[in-house]
Length: 195
Image 1 (tube, rainbow, N blue to C red):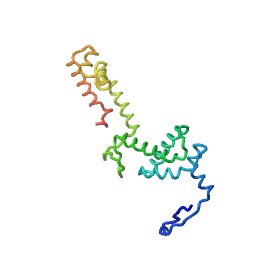
Image 2: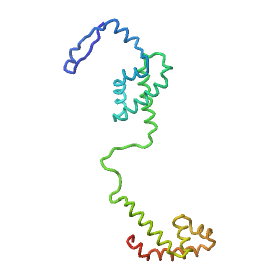
Image 3: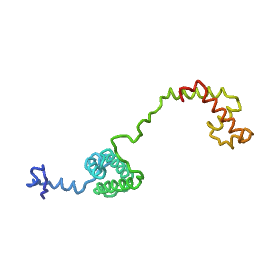
Image 4: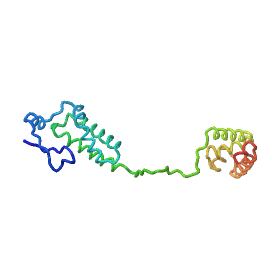
């Protein structure tokens, strides 16, 4: 029996024929892999080419093949015909890729620049801590009742009604006391650089 084999693109017009020995032919038709690792070592390049044809990114192709091989490993004992392993893995590749495609809810786009607005810079953590400390020092200078109302309103994020209920005062008292407290904080010389 002769099998046509193309050795290069320049010689594609004239295929070279090679005769397979009967022992080689019988070993190919009765192909059986003794272990999963032997199969992976023997067939990985071919299967990787298949995975690359299903994805645009070579890294995604490697991940896809790894997932398909993991599924094959789980089913290794159930696969009766080891001559059909390539078909099984190819089907696992296709099913896995289809599942990934269906699960993807957000389209990913590669872009040259990050979509962050210009002019937005992350503040220096040391400056943020200094501002935080200055704010707390200014708040501790307030009278106890005003301090409590400012903390409840702006740090605990309570409404004016909730603050009034917690302190047992009227809503008007909370409004006027918070207004006076904010006025004192605006005039605090330690917070001058923030304004």
